[in-house]
Image (cartoon, rainbow, N blue to C red):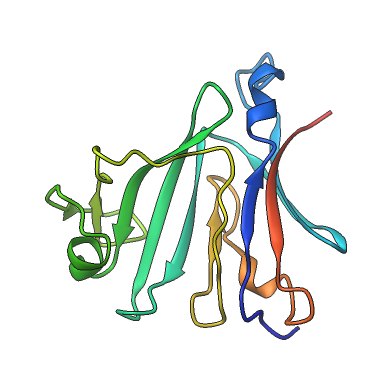
Length: 167
């Protein structure tokens, strides 16, 4: 399949999840991250924790970066950490006010930092673009990485990510 020129990822339906049964008796979420487009469902990934990440290849620096989100109690999600393989991505590209620190040895990236607290990033819907160069990838604990850019072709390069309660 030909990779897209751009992929718009919209995390929709999050506001509706606030009133839904978000966890089973075991305490584990009964939620899927579902990826769809005009052709229907392309993929789904069980959300086994309270967050997810989207990694990409930074177009300016050519190295990997990652935005990490945590689900809020009201169905929104919050950017709570930014990670990168190159320190300059955090200091220059994101221009974060805090000092990045070395990531844990088990982390996918080399450096981590909290986003600017003066500009909180809270979303009900998130649209992002990915190209062949950017290679946006969804990371959910317990699941293999899902390459969003490889799910579609140039004829229909848009996808939406939804949180959906499982039956």
